[in-house]
Length: 112
Image 1 (tube, rainbow, N blue to C red):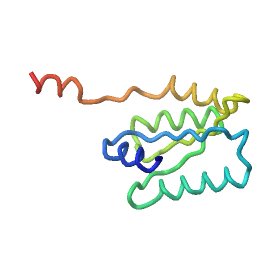
Image 2 (cartoon, rainbow, N blue to C red):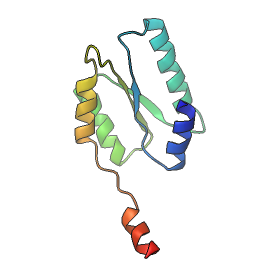
Image 3 (cartoon, rainbow, N blue to C red):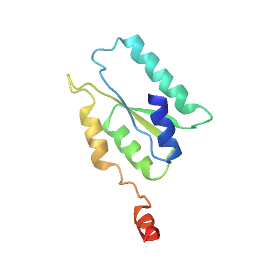
Image 4 (tube, rainbow, N blue to C red):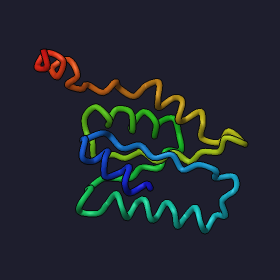
């Protein structure tokens, strides 16, 4: 399912943000393999994205700033809703990331 969602996001030229959940249940080797798979997919010639695992507030600010300019950055958040791990970083990112400018006003005007 992830590849289908990814294809739609890329086709619409949307910024990519990944949330790897349930890290409290995941064995370390599986988490490492999952991150490797995501990284390999993002670095492929079809996407040409740079995966950034967000671990600190500084990483959050870097990822949020890049959303308005360098759309090559693809932040990856490691989350657990049970322990709360990573939730503060994701919340901070959602609060500081710039709003997406879309063509909805232009589309409304052209439809009239």
